Amino acid sequence: MKQLLLASLMGSAIALATSAMAEGTDLQALEQAARAEGAVNSVGMPDSWANWKDTWADLNRLYGLKHQDTDKDEDGHWMLAYTGSIAFIVNKQLVKDIPRSWADLKTGTYKVSAGDVSTAAQAVNGVLAAAIAMGGNESNIQPALDFYGELAKQRRLSLANPTIQTLEKGEVEVGVVWDFNGLSYRDQIDPERFEVLIPSDGSVISGYSTIINKWAKNPNAAKLTREYILSDAGQINLAKGNARPIRAEHIDLPAEVQAKLLPQEQYAKVQPIEDAAAWEATSKALPRLWQEHVIINMN
Image 1: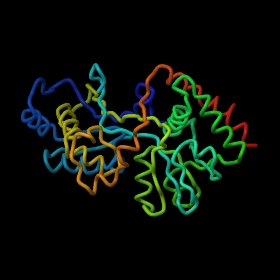
Image 2 (image 1 turned 90 degrees about the vertical axis):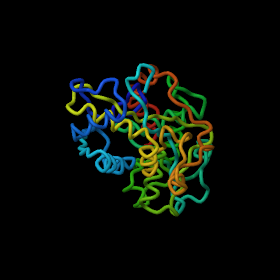
Image 3 (image 1 turned 30 degrees about the vertical axis):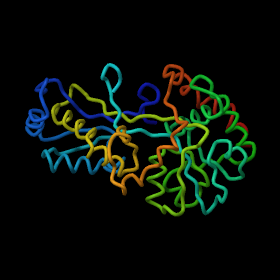
Image 4 (image 1 turned 90 degrees about the horizontal axis):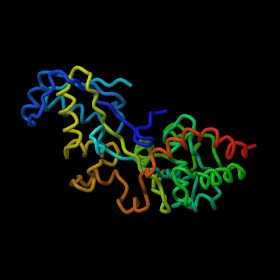
């Protein structure tokens, strides 16, 4: 399960060091220092995720930086590059009455794939999204547990994880996923076969952050990489990978790229984590609560 940053912010990490750091420099000086280092190392930012491959290719073409991947708050410890909101992905071949809210899910007849809350941040946030839509919050997810428990009683809770493989095989009727995952799955399998949408009665939004490691060996390359990620070109690259860039409302996305994202109006009732401490405690208890209130009803 990806580590949660402040309980809800998933972090990508760019390696950075304090020695030889171009302190207080402008972009031109930073570029020169980065070129001298020649490489940038990252964690959790592979080519296939959010179209990072175009950003790494651009950095190599523009600045000569080679890239290798291993597996902003008020104090500047982190900043977000793009966001993810919990969405539904619906197989239109299996579901004729498209659910557009959690309330629709409750009264439907199709199976819902929520994922494994003991291992997947997506599944954990899916529970919080349901709770928010039903009047709960970070410290009160009982509405969501009751909701999923009722689905289990009706034999409508599917044990299939909503992955590209299970979706392609037709094993998922409705999946609870991050919006960028759902959009990516849809586009990779068949855009005509699936619909992705944000539930109209509420959801949760999380941010993916670049974290600078002050002990790595290529500090200026990392700083320049972050500058590029937050530039118009870098943000457009993320949008090409179906990720909603943090500056989405402040840049002009090409029409073909804008079409890869959901309309802004669908995010009207999406909210961020408001009590990180409470959510950290609740999410740690969630696997046990899930067993006690949901899985127990599947027999």
